[in-house]
Amino acid sequence: MLKLWRIVISGFRMVKSGLCWRWLFIGILLGLMAWLIRSLLFGPTAPPPAAASGPAQALKPAPSQPRGPVVAVTTTPVLQSDFPVIFETNASVAALKTVDLRAQTTNTVQSVHVKEGDFVRRGQLLFTLDHRADQAYLEKARAQLAKDQASSADAQRQVERSRELLAQGFLSRSAVDTTLAQSEALNAAVLASQAALRAAEVNLTYNMIRSPMDGRIGVITAHAGSLVLANASAPPMLTITQMNPVTVNFSLPESLLASVQKRQTQGPVAVEVFAAGAKTSVSGALSFIDSTVDMAVGGVRSKAQLNNPESLLWPGQSAMVQVIVDVLQNVAQIPLASIINSPEGTMVYVIDANNVAQARQVQILAQSKTIAAVSGLQGGEWVVLDGKQNLRPGHAVRDSSSKPKP
Image (cartoon, rainbow, N blue to C red; front, side):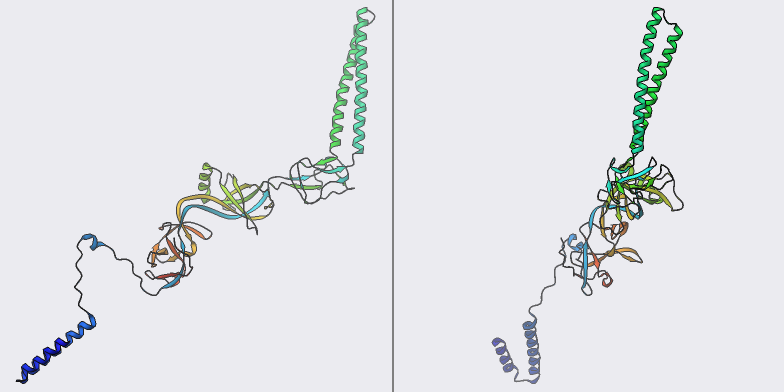
C-alpha cells in the first residue's frame, strides 16, 4: 500500500504541468485501485482444469445425484432363497374310520363302563349285558358234550367186544357192523356238541361289548337297564370316531394337476392344514387324487392324511389347506406391499448407495399371502415399502424405519 502511494505522488508531480495528462493519470489510478480491490476480495484466479488425459477418465460415469425434496420412506431388504408355490383352499376334516356300535345279541344292558367323550383303546370294555341266560346255555352245551363223549366211549367199547365175539364165532359179522355204525354216530354227536359249546362261548362274549379300535366316544344312547336289539336297523349304542390320523377333503384345480403329479414323482406332496380359528397348523401329505375331474366343483377331489396326536383337527370341522405344488429355486422375494402397478407394468423403487430412489421393472413369478417371488431384483438390495406415493425416480430418501442397512 505504501509503495502504491509513492507511485501516486510521483505521478502528480509529473503531470501537474498539463491538464490532459492529469486526467490520464487519474484513469490509470482508478484501474489500479479496481485491480487491488478484486485481488483482496476474490483472491488469485484459478487456472482452468486440465483436460482428461485418457479414455477411462472420459467414460467414467458420474454418480447419481438426487433431485427434488428428501422423502421419508420405510425400506425392506430383498431376500433370495427357495420359494414354495402354495395353493390354498377351503377343506373339511374327516375321520379315517367311524364305527356305529350295535349289540350282536338281544339283551338288557347291565353296566356301562365309559362316559361320553372318553378316548378308548382297542379291546377296552364298554358295555356288559345281562349274560345269565347265555351262561346257562353254555353250561348246557358243556353237559351235552360230556354226555355225548360218554356215549361215544361206551360205543367204542361195544365195538371192541363185538370183534372179540366175532373172532370166537359167537357173533355174526352184521352185528359187529351195526355196533360200529352206532359208535361212529356217537362220535359225530361229540363233534356236534363241541361246535355247540363253541357257539355258546361266542354268544356269551357278545355280552361283553369291547371297542373295535382306538378313538373317541360320541353320544351314548344305551344305559343300564335298557334293552338292546340284535338288529342292523336299531339305533347304535354309541359311535366311536378315529381321531388320529385324520384326513382333509378338498378340490384341487385341474390347472394344477400336472404340477402336483410332477411333485409326487419327487416325493410326498407336503400339506399344511389350519383349522377354523386355529393359529397353529397340522402337517401332512397328499394321500389321494381322484381319477376323474368333477365338473360340479371344477377340479379333482383330493385328500390329505395328517397325524393328529393333539386332536387339533376334529372330523366335520372346516379348515384351510395349503398344498405346496412347486418350489422356485433361489429367487428374489419382497413384500407385495412394495410393488407398484403402473401403466408400464409392475415396478418397485430400489434405493442405491447414495440413498436415491430408482424405479425398476419387476415380474411377479408367484405369491403367497404377503410375499411375492419376483424377477429383476437381487438379494441384498433394498426396496421402498411405505412412502411410495410421494416418490419419483431420482428423489433422495430418508429411511424413517431406523433399520441399519447391511
